[in-house]
Image 1: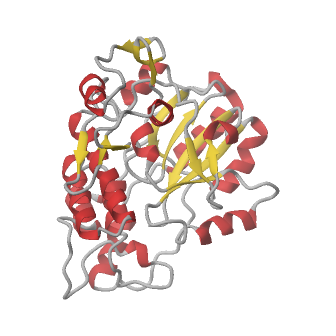
Image 2: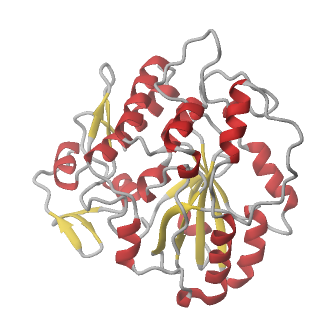
Amino acid sequence: MWQSLHEQVSPHGVNIVSVCLDTAGTEAAMPHVNAARAVAQGEPHPMLFDPGHLVDEVFGMINVPNAVWIDGSGKLVRPSEPAWPAAAPERPVPSAPPPDGRIGAMMANAGQIVADRAEYAAAVHDWALKGASSQFVLAADEVIGRSLPRGRNESLAAAHFEIAQFLHRNGSESDAVEHFRRSHELQPDNWTYRRQAWSMQPSALDGGLERFWQGPIDGTDWPYRGDWVSDIEQSGPENYYGRFVP
Amino acid sequence: MLVRDGHPIDADVFARRTGWSIRPEGACKDDTCIPLPDRPVTAQSLSERLGMAIATSPGNDVIALGPPSIGGRALDSVTVPHDLDFLDFDDNTVRLRDVRGSRTVLVSWAPW
């Protein structure tokens, strides 16, 4: 879908560059990368890999998808915000109730997530057509002011997340979990820190969906305080992504 | 940013990661320079002057410096670090400025 948006706006001078976050490596991403390559009408959009979550610390991204806009001189003209390539596709109303248990809870919460998909995609098209005169291009002080607060706790969260990744890469899994947990405590609004850590735990799903389980399996230990279902229910699925602010 | 405990900061790596360059007058970005008290530059002085928190791991000789928090926001400038680099899916280093168009939407995603 980002490939499709890239093909729509690149003739007007806007490129989509996607960055995949995954401490666990590229394996889970490759089917998606290959799918984008297969549908590309010509050269695929640049697809980058960020195993260390550099975009979290450099741009303040806290969930996926998040995006920033960079103008031709290398300046940010919009800060990190939830980002979408198009309006949501029409989906048929399910005829059967959701299943019981965790899968049903995951589906129910996912269905209540609020995302301003059409508004964001329209803004990208507007920027493509109007350039610097687009109403969605922000002044420098506005870009900085809209970026998320970052104090000592958020900086320390990033440091613990990086230590956790170092330990994970070196096979010290239980020590890594301790540092992942610390990053979660220090920056509780950062979903990428939580989802990344949860997604590397054992899963009850298969068929390519393994990484989305992100929670305890009955009868086994779960090393984290939260999980995707309990945390999204606590914060409210309507707050999972921030709203698009023009 | 991972650093060997007690070792000096690699100025090139530091600039790529943060956009702050280490110069004789201090740590500099755009028109701002923050004086640094020691040379070679240490993690402790950057932590103190730029608000970069330090996490340690007992038994390992690496420490991690969190990003600068000096301005109180995730962004302390609108200037994208000039040499910010990532990987491609063939494990090659790719510098963001080499794949940017005249204007860029840089979007994160994940398979999880």
